[in-house]
Image (cartoon, rainbow, N blue to C red):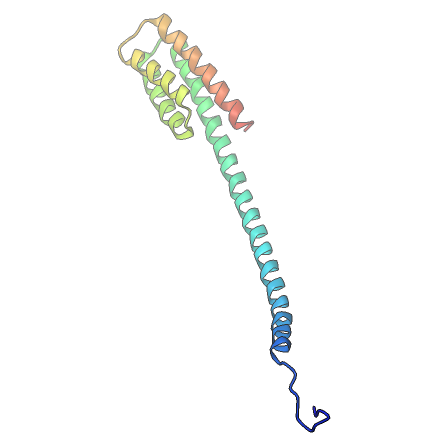
Length: 145
């Protein structure tokens, strides 16, 4: 552009370049934001599916352990088979440990010890009842199978 004296004036280019850069970065920022949101949603869906699968597997395993309690009670009720009670209590103790059920682990360990020592029938029967109570609590915590 020429001024009245014939000199050429230049408009500052820097603001124009900044404006073009900002206009070019806005779509890129929107694309990145959208991509992050979509990735987050996909990860959330995948994690929710894995949690559901784990919960279902835990419920099945818990039902198997509850079936073990029935076997324990039957084992003790019929011939007072303390060795059978000890073996089943040992299995239940391991399973309870997997679930992090420390109260159940403690009661089952006590039952296992009494059965291994040929403990008093009244004490063993009381411990079997306590195991049943702890298993019910754990079952209600994990939910229905």
